[in-house]
Image 1 (cartoon, rainbow, N blue to C red):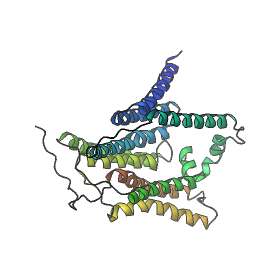
Image 2 (tube, helix red, strand yellow):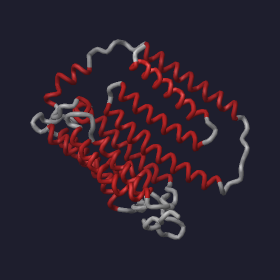
Image 3 (tube, helix red, strand yellow):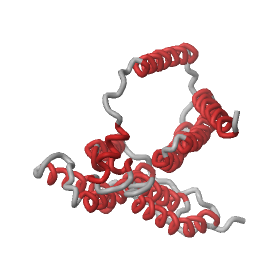
Length: 320
């Protein structure tokens, strides 16, 4: 067994172990931490499978922003549970058995369906490579996401927008002060944010010819917004704020407008070869801003507290 194979076996075992610990632990805070660990291990797995685009998205969104959202939700849950009397629930073992049985049946069905799939009629990598010169970009993932299957990406952006609308419809938790209590986190945020913006610009530019693109760049920018909020350098957003709403809708509307214009001149998101590169850059630039604000909004949007005022971002106190 060579070193690479041994690493892959160890990584696969660590993935299974972290997934099992995430689902089996009775303490929610440990489950959240193990979920973040699982996301980081999954990032390594995608990197080992030579899928850097997915690895970047998993690190920024799966382990990063999702982990921050779960930690924020856990803090809100603890504040709510502290005001409620403890209740005992019966039948937990039976419920777990039922859930495990249903999941086992679903897993077996999926495995059976996967095994019984017929051979692919065409080789998609060869088809993408054969038409890559007409896509406007030189990276096959970007060509698929924004040219050959651009309507899939349009619907994905719409799903994120609908998820945010659903969150607003359900209701937002009240704003609460950030976690910073000394100068360490704000100082880190001030130094890290310019680097994060630079990294996002690079990922956006690099998406045309190497791993990167709008989703990865937006995730880095959204993480910067979350970091500013945690360091108390940026206050929460109100749902009635005009600027975040315009930024969130702007990228999707730009994408939709280009799709409608192309539909009238040949087909849905079928770019003219001589203009494909420019249109893809335009769409990705709009999506970067829109998705960044959309992803950050899941963390930063808060309702008005009981006194009707959002606590402003204040200078952090020095630790004793």
